Every structure is written in C-alpha cells, then in structure tokens.
Image (cartoon, rainbow, N blue to C red; front, side, top):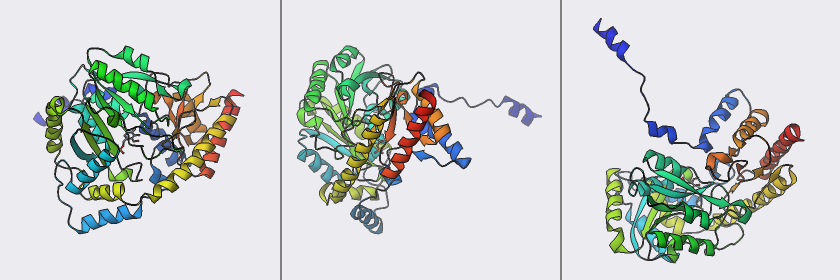
Amino acid sequence: MTLTREINQVRPVAAAERVGRVHYAIRDIAVLAEQLARQGKPIISLNIGDPVAFDFTTPPHLVEAVIKAMRDGKNGYAPSLGVEEALEAVRADAERQGIRNIQTAFTTYGVSEAADLCLTGLMNPGENVLTPSPDYPLYSAILAKLDAEAVPYRLDETCGWEPDLDGMAASITPKTRALVVINPNNPTGAVHSRKTIEGIIELARRHRLVIISDEIYDRLILDGTPHTTLAALAPDLPVVTLKGLSKNYVMPGWRVGWVIVSGPGDVLGDYTEALHRMVRARLSGNNPMQYAIRPALEGPQDHLAVFIQKLRARRDLTVELCRQTPRLSCVAPRAAFYAFPKIDIPEGDEEFVRQLLIEKQVLVVHGSGFGPLGAPGHFRIVYLAPEEMLRRAYKAIADFMQEHYA
Ligand code: PLP
C-alpha cells in the first residue's frame, strides 16, 4: 500500500528553466540526420567543423608526444592551471604575438571550457555581453546557463561581415560587462581588419568593457590577410584571449585549449583569482594531451601549408558553385572552413535546411541557428570535405533550388 502511494506521488522530473534557452543548432539539426541515416539514407554531413571527419589527420609528432606522455606516466591529475611546459609554451607564443601584461594563463578542456570559465567568472544574473550575430552559439548557450544575456551586434554582410561598430555602441547598456569578438570568424569565415579591431578596442576602452577574443582559427588564414592579435593592441585593457589546438592542429577530440588574461594587474586581481578558484574546483584539464602544446606551438608547422592549400581550393569551389546556383550568393570566406551563403527564398532558412536534408540528404545548418540579427535567409556549410563530395553536395543543392524555385 505504502509503496503504491509513493509511486503515485512520483512526479515527472522538471528540467531547469534556463536550459530551455540553451540552443546549439549545429548539433540539434543532426538529430534528424541520424534518423534518416538509420533508415539507410546516406547523408552528406557538412554541419560540423571537424577536420578529422574528412581527409585531414593530426600531425604525427603530436600524436607521438601524447603517447610518450602516457608512457611516461603523465596519467594522473595535472596541476589545475596546466602542466608547466605547456604553460611556458602558451605564454611564449602569446608574447611572440605581441601580448604584454599577461596576468595569468591556464589550459582548459578545449576553447569551450575556456569560454565557460571566463564568462562564469565574470557574469552576474541580469548582466549582458555583446556577442556577434551571426555568432558561434557557444557564447549565448553559456550566458543562458548563467541567467545572463547575450546582446547581439550585427556582422555586416555588405562589408565582408565586418562588425557594425555603430550598432555595437548603441547596444551597450549599464548592464554590459564584456564583448565577444570571434576573429577569424565562425560562421562567416571573415577576418576582421586591424582598423575594425582598433574600433572595437576603442569602444571597450570608452565603456570599460572586458574583451573576450576567440582566436581559435588564427593559423587558418587562407589568403595571407594578416590576422590581428587583439590583445597585442590593447595592453591597457582587460582582454581574455581564447586559443586552442582543436582546429589549427587538427585534434578537436583531444579537448585542448587555453586562456590568456592580459591587461593592467591592478584591475584584474579579483577576476584572475576567481578564475583560479574555478580552475582549482574542476581539478585538472586533460593531462597527457597538454604535452602536445609545446611541440604544436614550437615544432614543425608543415601540416599547415597542406591544410591551407586544400582549404583554399575547397573555398574557391564553394564560392564558384554558390555563385553559379540560382538564388544563392556568398561572401568569400578568408579563413577557417565555413561559408555562410545567402538564400533568396520565401521560406525561412530552418525549413530550407530541413527539406534539403529530407529530400537530398545534404546536411548544413540554418543561418538563424547562429543568432537573431541578419542571419535569417542563410545557411552555414563546412567546406572541409574533398572536392568530389562538395561537388555532389552543391549539385544536390542546385537541383533542390531548381525543383522548388525555378
Ligand atoms: N570557438 C569557436 C569560434 C569555434 O568555432 C569552436 C568550435 O567549432 C570553439 C570555440 C570550440 O572549440 P573547442 O573544440 O576547442 O572546444
């Protein structure tokens, strides 16, 4: 009797409300693709920026470094801030890029954890952060978890996806604590000019904002456009630079990233201590994987030339085929491995992406999954795939356009 009553009282487990605001379109759309794949339909997956899923491999000397670390017994917890040789390499690399006034550097479980720690250490509920739109959805997902707000600023497609600085300034409120810059950019493939970066720095200086600069793609510049290390131009400001090995060194599964906090020591003490406290509370990053950091940053870079050469050819193909396809147009990406074509159709882009997947088994991500401003009417395509696969995908997209919108 008692047991029956207790069972009757069991209620559905309600999820935390804030999780309802966490969205990650890049993987959410893949759920439908998995269902189709289970029905035996082969999917051309161009939704996730993972070079290892295509014909790119992790440089062998980095694999050897990690295997050696494991054989040498580096299998316990690492120091919370990171293993010493990795931190030395990270600091030296930052200094080579002109970053001065480094207050702390620590390694993390990918740039994803780096972003999480940096925002968690900064934000109170109700405060906000300016984030690019279209954006990489990691930032708004973390802010949703923190009961803080992501206030989008527009990347302007008509100006090569450069940030709209006036719009950015107009969005700042007394609750704004920081602004996020993703350069090189995901999802647009833009590389922001030095002038734009200087404009952003000036805005942060005027409004006393922390800058969070995600530079995870800084070595994947396709046309030699110089990449500007933001913190190097702002030694007087609190800047959090996020970097990692996932993309540049072809190992997203290893989960290796790091944070460099730079700026005046007298204003950063409290924040730096908060970051250290959180880093200690999560014990340790991946120990053996951190032994890839020094050889990556200081060893041979041969893989980069091959990587960039292949990416350039695939980018060129993407741009050419987008331009040939009715109702598609595309700003040529200048870095990383994403293009963000515009689609001129009456439906929303989420419906377009769903139908394209169902009818042609090509998986891309709808632009509106990357934030509210300016993105509707776009999709993100990952052009890491070999040219033959890309040609098949673009042919399928062209057929789809023909069948629906001729
Ligand atoms: N930042 C940007 C701009 C990204 O595109 C990604 C992954 O796609 C990440 C961060 C996450 O990096 P990681 O795999 O190191 O967590």
